[in-house]
Length: 181
Image 1: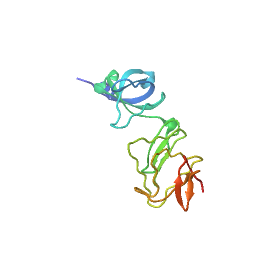
Image 2 (image 1 turned 90 degrees about the vertical axis):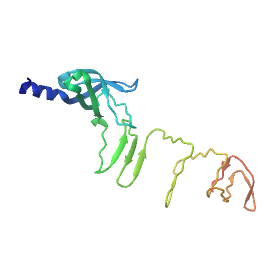
Image 3 (image 1 turned 135 degrees about the vertical axis):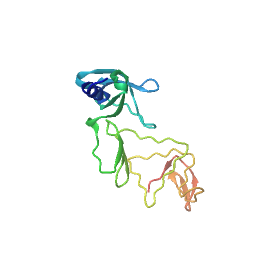
Image 4 (image 1 turned 30 degrees about the horizontal axis):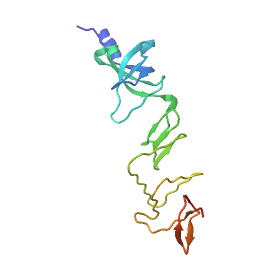
């Protein structure tokens, strides 16, 4: 029979803090190495993640280890977070972010996407719609298209490109760049 002291020791080993030192992202699950209680080194532990969300935390991230059947070597690491890069949020807000400051932020006023790096959207078809106004602001905007229609599908809005010949409001010869007005 297990005594009260042994029971407390077992319970204390079931759940504990974990500090990441190394992460192996090869294979079907991430395997991590890190420090547990009082400098305890834990190796080859599985990191459990939610379906559809993947991340690769930096060394120094902190989380929880759940030790299956009290065995520290048979633990699973949960909920790795990194207080060095934590965002302050308002109640009810959600954010996806990294150590470079790239952010998808669901705010109380709308959604904000920010990056100091390149943002790329790729799909067979993309539709953007705004109920009142849409603004594109950039020092340079490049539209690479063989078929540009302003005014919607089957548009009848005439657009002259730079150096296009326009006679009586009709484009009669085309070039490669749009005229600025």
